[in-house]
Length: 130
Length: 465
Image (cartoon, helix red, strand yellow):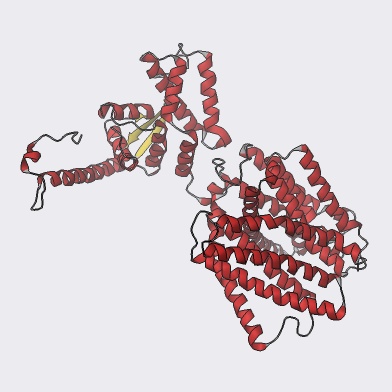
């Protein structure tokens, strides 16, 4: 699915934080994890992950370390979520949840001016919200 | 990277090239380049595992990482939050004024430092032969531009890859200027023709610098507006550097006075002259190295000062009409003439700069009306000066000053009436803005020719008096 640019920009930080909340990781693995989690539907321009990682690092949401390359064969920069990042992530989740809930509510709460007949509402949504 | 034996040497070359491209101009720090390279290699491995051959994997992986210029900009804006960092960091060559800039920043930096040191040294060279700022004022006044401009031209010519033939032409023109400034037997230190040469030579030689800026593009009139923009931005940078220099000199005086050493010599003989000429080169480099900053500042200043200039000029015109005092009611002093010509030159500069900063496709707006008012007010003042000068010439005959004043005001009158007329037509939507712009750029050679004429041809005509 093609996500709009704005939506990608808004969702990238919470996604990265959420993935790092699962455990320490590095750039390529994060991109791969996003692709896996979304069933291949969400693809970023890979490079653009790095400015985001560096920003989150500067803001103190994540911290980074270089390994010496003895384990995987390649020197990697590993990122780990901080307590501050956890707090931010919780806040992100809360907000996204609210947006999601609100969006869903428009579907369920037909209200007095609803134009659609109720039968439509009971039908499974086409496309659906992931 | 021994764990990937299936990747042949070719891929290594490709990756090395990609690395260089990313790291071009030192715009991305090495650690981040390493990080991205690891990403690229991981991706290539993963693609290799699903059956792509190394070259294909490389291409796909590179594409997934995305446009390197955009990435570098993004990384840079994340990394450098402060303005000054932006100044020194040249991210790319997107700016319209720098199509030929291709040398890496460190080389540009070295060249800039060398050229500004050259200029600073050049202004001290005459001192080796016994000249001094105090006693040889006229000599320095005539040659001032020759200490700074050739070095700016070298700096720009190098960056914009001026060809050999054109290079020799530029050298010849500077040589001609130097000849006029120094070989003419001016009657005295206070002779009018000498002052005229000193005033006009910098203007004429600036067009030689402009040619170096344009390089091989000098025939393209569209690029001339870039040159105007460059000139305006350079002037702004130079003034800003000058302000900083003033603070520096103030502190030098304070500190050395405190320990009982008189710093007058240091300031007047070294800091001020060397700084002033060196700063021209630095300003030229700054305009090139980072365009975005002044680019935002200069149009704002133009918009701020254009209405103010209009107000002052209208107030002046109203005063002349009300009081009935013409210019030079008593006598036309040289300073007065120079003052008015300078005012008109500043007005033309404002117009040119406003034109260069304007989006040519935008429809007429309120600011265009202000521009029109500026042109009309300046034209009215020009006519006032012209009549005053003409009547003096009729009464007392020709003199170098009056001739120059007459010519200057005629040149400006034609320019201003053209601008006023075309601005009016544009305001009435009878012609596109490009017509106004083309008139203004097309007129630039007239300024150059007039300045050269006044500096080089006029003194012999008046017997150097």
